[in-house]
Image 1 (cartoon, rainbow, N blue to C red):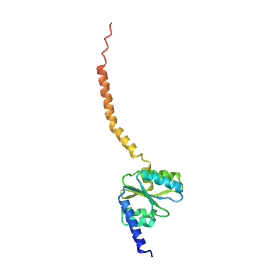
Image 2: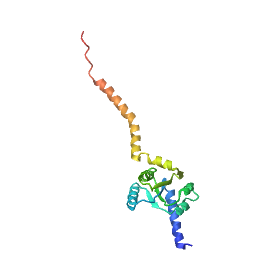
Image 3: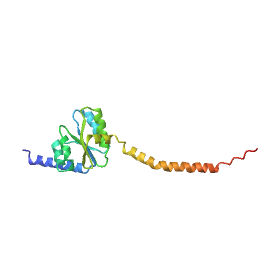
Length: 173
């Protein structure tokens, strides 16, 4: 039987993981086995730069953290080695970065994930990964809004140009 201090440490870890999950809008759990230290370091750096919190957590501790929540269905995927990536405000970055990494490494796999407190399928995670970045989406929206205004401005300019053009002299017979 573990000592009281070890149990207390594990309770604190479970509480921290539960808090991290509850305060995030999206998360992805991966099987990270078989990657090199250099690859893992590069992956962690990319995730950190995107504002994603990524850490290796024991399956039993994740299961305890999600017990009794709508995310309890993720427990089925918690076998082998597990790492969790969570984001407080970006729904897509973790999925995009981890999916790209998984495509380049055979032993690295996405296990499960969640969005807004609901478990999502691996297919949904891959769909999220293929969405354009936030900046690209915002520029697309800006273009959609500005297109009618630009068209109107061109039409007004064409009318103004036509009104300013000198009238042609009538042809002499």
